[in-house]
Image (cartoon, rainbow, N blue to C red; front, side):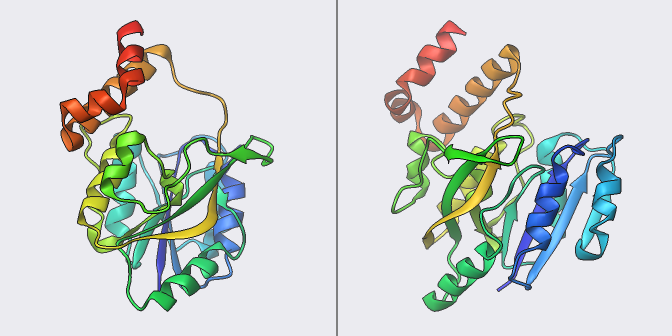
Length: 244
C-alpha cells in the first residue's frame, strides 16, 4: 500500500524542517513525497535541498493560492492514498504510516477514507493538547454538519476518489473537498490513532478574512446539507456572521 504525502509551503524556513524530518523518517517505505513550493524567497529551498534525495517530486513556482498548489500535488500523486502534511505539521510517530498500513491490510480492501485524531503543537514543536473537534467513532459525509470533525492532516483519501479542490473557495475548500470525498467513499476507516501533529502557530487571519471564511464555510454547508439543516446545526455560525 502506497501513500502519497503532499507538502505545500511558501517562505516556510522556520517550520519546514520538522515536516521534512517527519515525512522522510517514516518507517513505512512505500510512499511518495511531493513538495509544492510557491517560489519561496527565504531559505525554504535550501533546507529542502538537504533532504532532496528523499523527496520524489519538488515543484517550486508561483501559484494562485493554497488550493491551486494542492491541486498541483494531487495531479502528481500516484499512491493508493493521498494526504497533506504542510510546513510545520508532522506525523505523530515515526511508525504512523506503518501502523495505518498494517491495520488496513488486515481489512482485505482499501477503504475510501482513512482517518484518525490530531494533536496540537506550538512553534517550539511541543504538544500541548488535542484538537477541540474530535473524530467520531463512525465517520460519514453527514458528520461534518457539526463542523470539520477530522483535521485535514488526519484525513487520508483514496486517490481515485480525490477530485481537485474547488478554487472558487479561498478559505474552506478543504471542507468541501473532504465532504465530496466522503460522499463517494463506501468505507471510512477509523484507525483510533493519533496520526498527525498539527502546528497551531497562532498567527491567525485578519478580521476581514475571518468574516469571509465564515461566510464561505456556511455556503459550503448549505450546498451539501441544505439551508434548514445548516441553520439548525450552526446557529452559532449565524450569530458570528451577523455580529462580524
